[in-house]
Length: 119
Image (tube, rainbow, N blue to C red):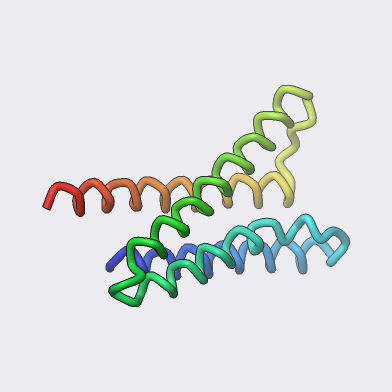
């Protein structure tokens, strides 16, 4: 699977994660949609990357948003641990899921960028 397709899948997974968190959480807080807010630009950037002349730009934008999503969710998790507020609930599970999905995507992108540069 090429990186544009992986980005599209990643964006869709994050959007689904946000939607699930929002609706399962009773539609109380819009912050449950944060994974979707990260997934949407990854999805759009990856769709842009399907065009051969826009591939590099699209994938660099996608990995940028993936890295932001990873760092933001990891930062929030670490903050909860430091403050002693860490509870394994829906919001924490959603943050952990977003962090993991974004990390995997960023690692795949970096490997792909290295391989492209080596050619």
